[in-house]
Length: 418
Image (tube, rainbow, N blue to C red; front, top):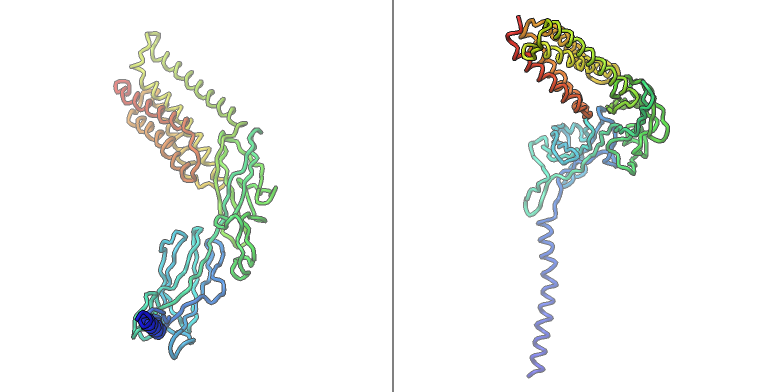
């Protein structure tokens, strides 16, 4: 009995395995037919390599080919269809969407970027001439899946990156400045691409920029080592404001700005400031003595004189910023407005400061104190922040305090003004 049971179990097991071998391929085939996509249309780049490299501001040609890839028309080009191409930046954000006609099947377009970025161009939809629409979302028709298959094109729109290496400011009126120039987007190890995929027909793109034209405050810099450029430039301000321009044939010229204290020039400006303050104090003492007429000096009655003296000091600070604006504009900074505001504030502050000493036209003097505060702090801060330059906080705070005290004193001396 035991022997018969074993034979029966063996037969049953054999039949189960045999049935499984027959059913499994059929089931697998059915699932494959339901899940394996048949991409009805394809939109591929016309070039074998989908990576390209160029400069910002340069129109780069991107080309695709649209083909029928399934059915009787398989392998033929799709004419007069509309393809939607999505443009993503390096952060995978959609920055643009283009609607393009396939014309005879191969279509191209020019695209440029004003900022350095890696842009990806991906066809996401095709609408045929008869209105049929194909997207990357697969369409289920009769147990078959159809859709659009596409490949992207990546274009690097690059520019130059300039960093400050060193500066020497121990010579009066001169600064020796060294900068390092690289390409902004290229990786440290560089990038290898076919000749046709690069703007300058290079096969290897190094990170370090070599044989480029570099100017520092208008002076042509010399390449002292690979990617490092040096120039001796005239500087006569207490702070050196440096403009670096980088150019190359066919590339958009880029610029960078830096600022740093000029050690050799600072003492001269400090002595000039001290001389100006002493001169203001001398004028102040002279006016106060004349107003007192040999009597006991009353500060309360001389608020207008004190306020005018402080206004004269702030006007000298305005003069300094006006000179900074003029000198920097000549070297490539967009600070013409700072130059104009600084010089106007100086002239206005000087004139109204003298009016305050003579105790005349109080409203105009109060307005001048406000203009001085806005120019020497708000405007200067805005122009420095424009290029992410360091702000001389001590000078800015001093300007605010002097302007505020000057305005306070003048506002509280109504009885002194005529």
